[in-house]
Length: 242
Image 1 (cartoon, rainbow, N blue to C red):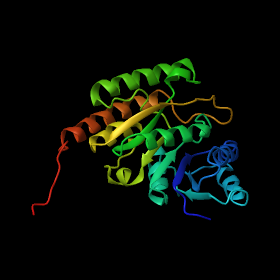
Image 2: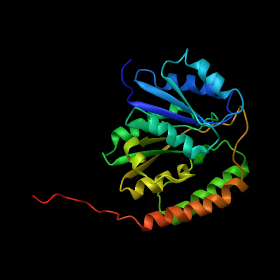
Image 3: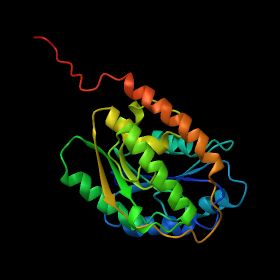
Image 4: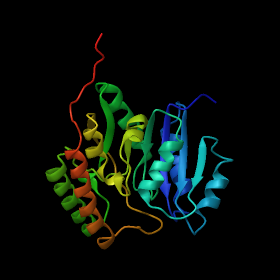
């Protein structure tokens, strides 16, 4: 099997009914190219891990990582990116709301852009399939982030994205960093693109997020990212004198 030129990382926690359909959709979406799929089981207490293990007989590109305890989405994404083989990594949420059929559009946008594009974000604002409360939360959060962080991204919380692995590994890591990827990549002097993507309703399982467990940590994290931005020598280039 040829070396993969794309790694797909999916953090999951108690998503036993979603992992198999999602994995099969990824295989269909990426048919014709070498890829790998890394599911990162973040301390699931249901049958998620068992179902992922069973899937390996059906999908040879599938790898399964597991955390010894639940650590959160940012740690799961980071574990997957560190273990990935390819230079470019696509990420998806494990609840099935991101559509794997959108991954080729992200790849095409990166290929058509200049060489400094290191992050391609999905933009699901136009067709969000969430409750009105979650849509309102997201609209407010994106507006505040755009105003304070100047990340020039309409939907910075979207789970489907295409990221340059070496750049990710150079970023400062902190819990919840997955919510601030555009600002962190732009801090590195790279270009971030946004591509319209599909967004689907959750059909199985329950959401792990709510208003109270996101609001205050989001405020604290945003202040931290602003501090990081203020301490970075943006635009600095180094040349060897000869």
